[in-house]
View 1: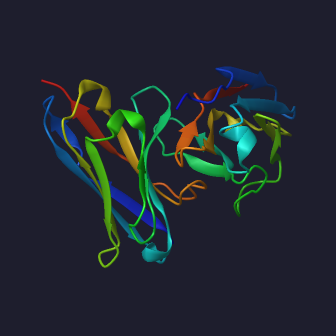
View 2: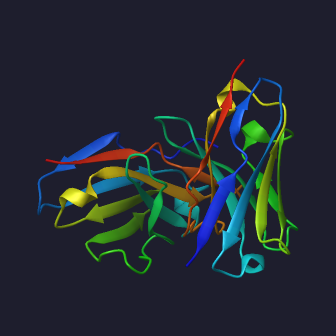
View 3: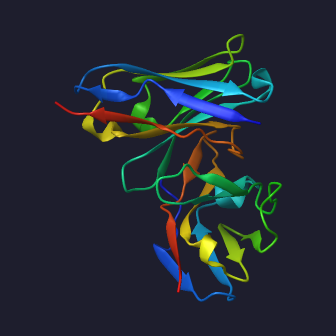
Length: 110
Length: 116
């Protein structure tokens, strides 16, 4: 049950676009369309932003989008805003009927 | 409005036990898988365990197998995590979340500290 691989940090200026990658294996990300993305602000609980690779819960702006290619999933945030600054985590269902998270990515809005 | 409220955290000595609870409201609890996720202070998220809506299937991360037990009482709209043989590395904020993979809703978390 190794953690999915995410970059430790990404940054962008307001209005720009950024992409966070989440790399796993054929036993998790590559094998199932059950990748989720979560946003976490300091001291707060995680919040669902993307589920089942591409779906946005109601209330999540369409500036956020998810995708997957092979064993790598991605979260793209366009039109960066100051409020997007947070930690982002991906997760995936696995062939062991468990769930594995990525190590998290700190997004800084410059 | 969906609400998940965890309780039961605290300070416990290594080798001790603790039972966490999660009170759910705002949705039909008995229709959903439920999950526990933990977060070591200042670090990332770790999936701990999940239980099917009717309690018939349970899955655990390897590091807690044989020590933790996830359970639920659908009549009380409550989820539980019985933690035995606690270790220092179990120190974390424990969150309950709705669903198996989507994890659409999360509680505010309860802090478990394992220390002598």
